Image (tube, rainbow, N blue to C red; front, side):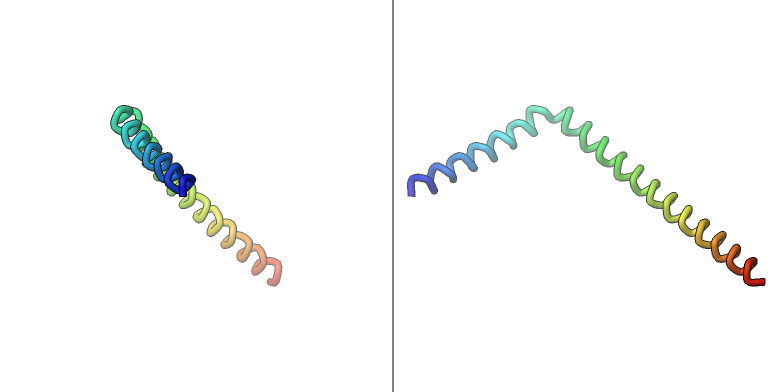
Length: 70
């Protein structure tokens, strides 16, 4: 029972410390959120480019196969 109470106390203290850190370090937290948002946009853009390149390559390969069959 003592271990359970001690574990709960540690978890509560850690949660409080995290909340205090987030408030105290608000400017860095805000910048990190902006950076994360920008990275998400870049990943989306790169995925679109990859999909486009795959479509372009697929069409070229199909065209080459048709040319060889003729």
